[in-house]
Amino acid sequence: MTVQEMLQLIPSSLVKVASGLGGLQREVTQIGIMDAPDIAEWVKPGEFLVTTGYALHGDVSAFCRLVSRLSAANCSGFGLKIHRYWDEFPQEVMSLGKELNFPLIEISPTVKIADIVDSMQYAQKSGGQGVYLGGSLSLPEFLLRLRNGHLSSAQIRFWAQEFRISLNSRIVAFELKGESVNAPEVAAQLAQVFGWNYIFHKAMEHATLSIGFISLREGTTVDDLKDRGVHWYGSHMYLGTEEATLFEYSVSARKAEMTRYLGNALMPQAHFVMYQDIAPLAILHAGLDMERANSIIERTILPIAHYDQVHNSEWLPTLSAYFDNAKSAHLAARVLNTHKNTVIYRINRLEEHFGINLEDMATTFKLYLGLMLYRLQHLTMD
Image (cartoon, rainbow, N blue to C red; front, side):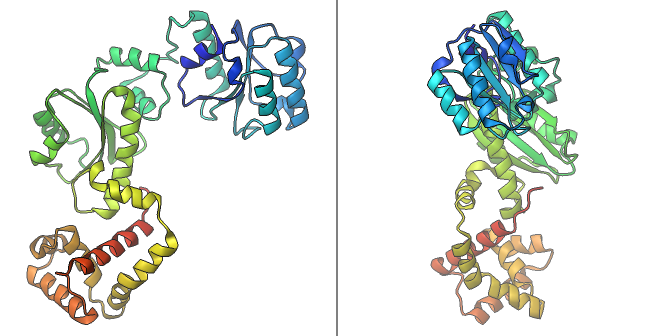
């Protein structure tokens, strides 16, 4: 088995080729752990070494000498667990690896050396025919590893078959937040729309947050959830992007997390938010120019906030609820737990005091943009 073939059987999130791409066809005969600085005297041809780098004591020159001697001894490659004793391969070492066509592999700090060695040994001994499973997995553990990109393609196929999850169905990741995330009524609502072919599990780190994905049956889309007016019983459903197969779950999951992150702050009254609903705001957030954002906020939102602070007028929360509910005084009143006429009165007074007209599209856009930027500035990850 070559170094390249071995690496293909290990989750790509755990290993990365730092240098020596030209040597990926070197044959791997065994896996070893480096525990002494003079190990080059004992390595065997084809041996792939793995280490935390402790034995090198931060000595770049010694690191370069080691790589030269390992390559000369026909060692197949060298794996370094980063962010322990070395944050990365030194530039001098990487240049040498490139020159010698000697594979230098970064190993993620999230994995134990023993586990990565087991994984490499299994891949090497099985000749690519077996799958290193890393022990048994429960369904939630499988989904969490899949979500975080900690499974190889071979492992995904194996565990999907074990849990009878289709690899060919379109999927969409979700995050369901609230006090009723495990309520039977919520599961019944999902089943009513999609049948029982969906995965739903509770993340271990949050009692009020469930994450997972929905397998979309033929002829169904996430729009069906919105079109059928599904109720979430006090919870909030945030969806990622639709993806072709289970292999792209981590992509959709990252989008679902961003949907919750932005949707919770920018669309607090919405109980169902899809990534496409917040995609423009995600782009705005990613490229936010704080100086220009502050300038807009100072001209649009801060004068209202200051007036509220002095007069206890509640104009800003009223304007916020008014915009969030498509300028409906009736719906804004429900959110604010007040009367519709109170909302109308506050909006009229706000227009009168600041000399603005919320029927004017340009004025509305500036205020709405200022409000969104104000919220983006005050985002907190929950």
